[in-house]
Image 1 (tube, rainbow, N blue to C red):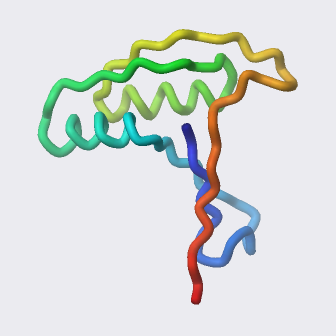
Image 2 (image 1 turned 180 degrees about the horizontal axis):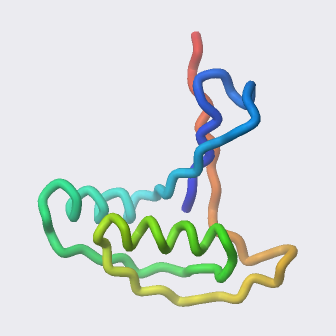
Length: 90
């Protein structure tokens, strides 16, 4: 899963940061990073640029991945889940 972060004022600028996220990944990454534990995740992975970004971040956090790869058809997917964080400004 990945999250778009549009900043303090949603989509006021022309950029968004992409963060890898998701319950299982967050737990595994934090156990690996904070406590030096060996962790792993097993999940589906789509073969396209967002999938590549997610795979790179999983590896960078020291989490061992076990993927079931699915070929992206270039149009309709399968796609990795996405959610957008909107800051509460008031």
